[in-house]
Amino acid sequence: MNKRRPYVRPMDGWWRKNPYFVEYMIHESTALFVAAYAAVLLFGLLRLSQGEAAWNAWLNTLGSSWFILFHLAALLAISYHTYTWFKIMPRTMPPVVIGGERLPAWAITGTGLAAAAAACLGLLAIVWGMAR
Amino acid sequence: MSEHSKIIEIEVLRYNPETDKVPSPQVFEVPFTDDMSVLQGIQYIKDHLDGSLSFRWSCRMAICGSCGMMINGVPHLSCETFLRDYYPARVRVEALNHFPIERDLVINMEGFIKKLESIQPYIIPKEPRTLAQGEYLQTPEELNRYEQFSSCINCMLCYAACPQFGLNPEFIGPAATALLHRYNVDTRDGAKEERMELVHSEEGVFHCTAVGYCSEVCPKHVDPANAVNQNKTNSAMDYFLRFISPKGGAK
Ligand code: SF4
Ligand code: FES
Image (cartoon, rainbow over all chains, first blue to last red):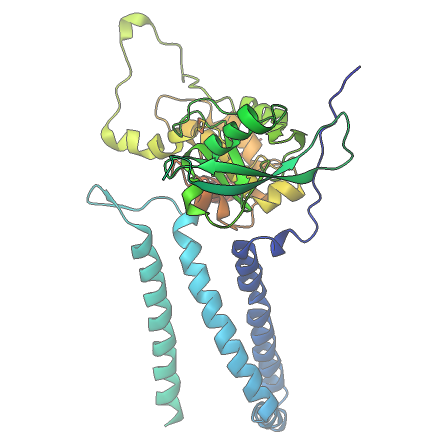
């Protein structure tokens, strides 16, 4: 008689069992804020196409304290998303060899974060210039 | 002070397929010295407290890859993990996650062996080579491309760290993909196209959601997540290439 009876452990609640997985779920869920923010912007575009009154009404809505709160939350969540995105980046790309040396992970992450920061500041500067 | 002046509690998840319906924990009190690994603690249990305890080990020096276990919920090689780092708290030991438990700390690794076979983990020359042609030559750069991925010791810690493998045991997973990549980027090899079929397949790399914990726990710094994710790009490239080049891309 075969005495083997391999036991398969259940996967329920797997992500709660290790802090690494909890962090993974948190940074994955910040993607929802990215999507929500994109939806808000797209809706603005739609209102713009509907004429000046519609556009101004949309701008008014954005001024409400709920929307300011949402934007603050989105800023936090998207910043964290950006950080984790570039943190995992060295693991997801082919090795970058410069002068015979492999670029270390921190340099890739650092370059990504610096590029993101530069893009944000550049965009802010452009908008600032247009608003004046 | 005697040599065994300290006692640590080791909690082992036991499972006997002949008598138990489900695994259950059993606590042992083990005298230990600061130079003792978790593996040695478990060997003490088998030698002095309960001879029926089952586990795998061989080299005791982090090279054979057989002593992997969950230690306080984290996949480790038990021969290079030390009891002193857990004392005075209790240390919890369990069979590697995501694999069926055969008995106590012994897992069923048939699925992993099948995956290893399926990637053809050996060099398949582009064309037959005669002895007279001599050995293959490689530059240090060409060696660098695969050396890291050839350090894998098949310990399966990365599978125990991969929730996607836990949720879908068919997923080819980290180590097998790292080895697949190791041969694909070797200049002596000519079987990339065959192996890419596995990369593209239902069980292939796209199960991966870049959790990244596999690379975190790997004792040999293979960075299997890197192999998996590079091959997502390779697979996507193959897919698009077939639209522009009749020869490029998968079948
Ligand atoms: S890739 Fe690392 S963790 Fe996975 S089996 Fe190989 S050595 Fe072990
Ligand atoms: S006993 Fe060989 S790796 Fe631990």
